[in-house]
Image (cartoon, rainbow, N blue to C red; front, side, top):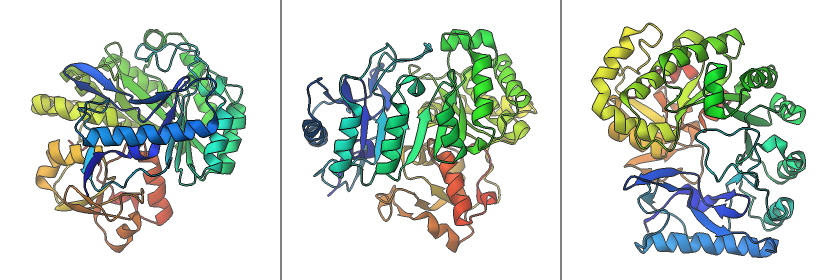
Length: 434
């Protein structure tokens, strides 16, 4: 029976210093930012067993309330999907986000108070994770992310990492600002155990200080060079567009900095300030220009993230023709838009919100049919998605279809999976789908 839910509500857990959330999605309802939906607060004397029960009961209640049309923190969320969701009978965590402290050595302009302020966890993180492991709540965990405050400043970072590596067979990702160098983290990157994402958000020290709150750009670049020296594919460099760093001058400075410091073999993620309900024509042009410059001039892998896809598709409708005309005027970004010439149909890799937005909004899919979708998440396979079948990535071995990647956080993993399966990456549709 179909119902409303999302993969985060069913299978994710976000551990903040004093509360547990079910997602990190942000969206606007009546011009007010919503999201980061809270499940419950954690008291300092809460036992591990009570924590597990509370997490399960809170998820069940939220799921029931949504499908009873009650007002919840999820009301108006564009990421809810109406499909055949299973009942929530046990705490099954497939995605775990560790945000258990908000101690940070930077103060970014776009940072939420949820992630900054010096709060430490008022519960024993190791005891909670051990109990979840013993309760089999982590038996199907495939993704573990460290976020919140700066992860490497936590003295228990290494101990917690070792516990999780022993307890799960997940993919591990650490969001670090790279101000403080961690030898442990560097070793994990080199051994292909963990991937990191670092936001730079500037090409000059002056703008870095404005956006990130401190003049540490040179230190960050030096540490990123060390982290990426052996395994650059495990390092993603992120640029979050704000009202302070969107000029072409800053974008070009950022591109030059990457070249000068030989960081071009890393992956690159383009995003925007989540407080921006809409992005301007100038910002959107700068984003596409950056995408084209990284792809054309550096020959690097670059992608727009979930947050930007949602806002970009809304803004692009109004400014499409003017922006495309400007894009083609610049050698750096010319031909960065995906062409549908000689392509009749494609397979989309990623059965989620980005795929829906691509199909709904992009001009590309007004000219190109979708054969089917593939997804690495077993829960999605064999389910219908937007009227199309969802299959295993191995199905791509049986045809020569062109492939469109509709995933942001999993972009680098998809490229890696293609190579592991022996799928030629030349089958990827090149350029930005708009």
